[in-house]
Image (cartoon, rainbow, N blue to C red):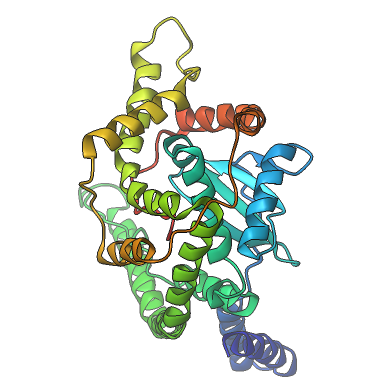
Length: 357
């Protein structure tokens, strides 16, 4: 229905503009409907140009691992891998053919042991599979269109001019009148957009609510896929280690500041050679200090209890030292590019980890 309404807005706006071209009211209404249709247009995903991109020819060992994980999970392997500075592993789609893109957060990759990396990747692949209705083409594109449309039509808090200059200044009255007129027009546009913005936001919430049961089932099935691929112990450990996001981010921020301010022998933008090794050591220290005391949400606790109560699954995918060495060599240049990006843009704020969510 979302896509049909968007198509109807496009067709209706075109007819009003073309047929009523000799009038004034109909083309104006058509332009308004055309603006709404453009705000709700389907979004075709694309690769992030700011992140390093790997294809099978660039990283054959990594793609061999991903192919084995995808076969274990019963899903299509990713066509492209991008690495970024977030503590997450996600799968998205891009292009008209909806190719699969795996986005690997290097902080998570550094903090997790090898089998937990397998569990996180398996979970992300299975969660974005066909059984998750939110990852299917029509529903996913509808959610993206509604979310983007709501953002496009939201109130612009910067569209306001405050004029507090000396009233005796030259042209002060004209400038004050112009500021008042501008603010009035801004308020009017906000009120005009309030109705469609509210309708679009309510539709997005309704679609999320309708797909919530299927999404929860897909989440549990993804937990089972992670246990099959990496073992039950690795899947549970990966869930427990989601709370490593904050200490890893804090350590990354400290390393960035140290490189920029305290290390005088190298350039202020040159990354530390052992950046990811230091993050891994910090994660190991936090894991050792934490022991069995893990902060979990109610949903994560129920998922851990469910996996712990289920029959133990052996690891279908294991990583030996030669495979780890080859994958590490393939990721060396992307790791350097991500560190350069973190040095340039600083470390992102700590958000809710989505490694296994």
